[in-house]
Image 1: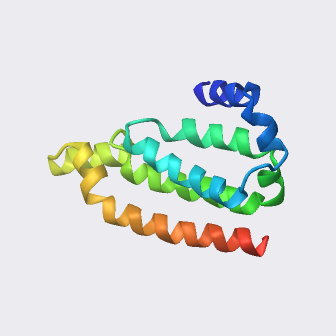
Image 2 (image 1 turned 90 degrees about the vertical axis):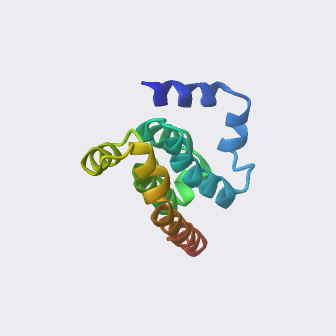
Length: 134
């Protein structure tokens, strides 16, 4: 519900015609959406809200229509990284409980290098798929 409400607000805003007319640089927007998902998750926000919002906002635009595979990869890999860095994800909660440490330590310290490596590789893959037009 939250993601749908936020995407409806974006679609009602003055930026929506710019997004629909491809009046923006697609690759930077794609990579920004990719990075925003784990960044929001690291701040304790649920991953699914941003993934749903990004999908609903970007899918009907020229970016989503012309580069659907790159957008799908950005959302999928961004969500995977978000799970690693979100202290309220089940993975962090369970690992923290079993190891006797706070879930924020698992998410923000133990998983940080892995999340950064996956983010860097993901950005390269998304850029390659975007450039190749796959």
